[in-house]
Length: 132
Figure 1 (tube, rainbow, N blue to C red):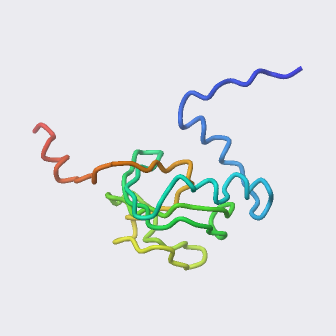
Figure 2: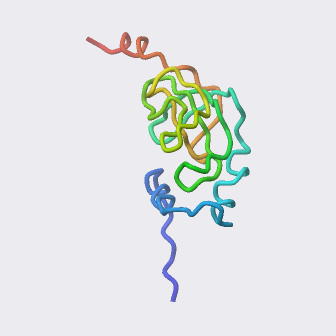
């Protein structure tokens, strides 16, 4: 007897199944995180990254074997200092792109990156709009 599958209702729910460790160089890893997972993206395009609706510009698209589970990743230079890298993978010391600070870049899976006409976020403009 099979239990009916409950539909996911939020982004947080949809990431739960992706937290399982994927072993690199297995058919599943190649299928889930292969070149097809990033084919909808192009270099130097504006994007928005989930979770958090962080905005930035795509600076790298390609395979990074030393990052969690291997496969294809997207390197993004973020508008705000909300990232975890300057474009360098800590474990190997290899730089894949150059971000203007240690918290201005990040590596993301293609499924979490949406390309589009996302204007740059200007923190100063946002602060001026806040009622005092």
